[in-house]
Image 1 (tube, rainbow, N blue to C red):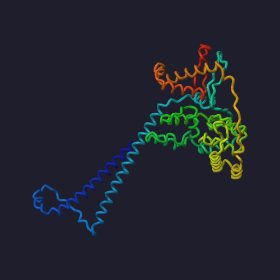
Image 2: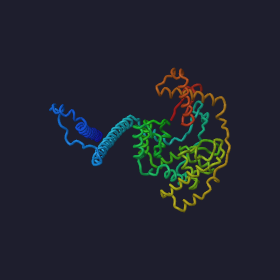
Image 3: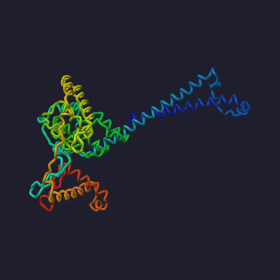
Image 4: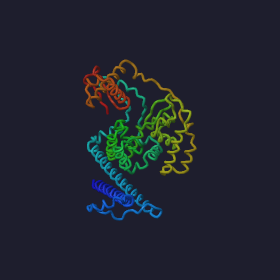
Length: 429
């Protein structure tokens, strides 16, 4: 706060000095004008001895004295500009101080999960809820529009790991989960209200957003993201973090028109190969998808190939260049990868089968009850009673949508009470 107070003192001093200079100049001008234009009042003025004479008046405006008037105006403008700059600096320091204080208060109140719980959530790649009969007999996995398959680092092409680091987080192996740029952006967004959705997040922050936080775009969520990213980086290795990210990142659609996440699902769904068999060009294409997966994906919603593949190919070339610039590939490899016919390697439209376990009365009944139970649980967590929830249709729809999203995108287990009172479970992880 010392610097903020000092800057404010300078600001007000400059303002006072500037206005005094302006006033002095004006007074001198008025006095000079009075002496020449109001000679009839000179005797009356001499009778008032209590008035102090004004020294050094400005001479009459003429060709010989215009430079003096111009200098006076320029000096006045100069001091006003200096005062304005000092004021802006003062306001900036005060705003920065408020932002840092607010940011620190959020960090202090952010609950920090245990290492085991955090690691389990970060590495969890189950993409939907699981419904059970009594005695833990699996009924079905909830139908989800997201296809994801987890693989270990040894079953991933090294090129895809290098490509994702080169394009998404060039300093991944140097920082501790966040970068100064991320911290500064968070503080600025708290003061200005903008910037919370801009790019620049590290891979660790992106992983935290995907696995530990909701999709809300508030400054509080950004602060939590930073705290958790630093904690994840402290207790997990870079290899573990990179593997977890590559298994959960959203990567557009496959040749069946299904939404996909993770490099294994992308490799199989886009190129018809395993993630460990991806070449440099294919790895670069997949690594470019997270930035805008449904713009760069080669497929339409029905699984058909897009007529225009320009944007995806351009993005792949950009990733290839970044890999070359970072030293991950040689110039020869770079040139060969650019010659690879990427579009020709895209998998053609396939077909989806129907899982019999997701049809029928039992599945529909359990799914409905799971959704209702989770809706009430989510509302209760926010301090909303069941009575209030049922009385407000729009509020109930909001929480029902949240419950449906949880069931289809997060690992959740549920056993309805009419199947087994003793084994009823509804737990979101």
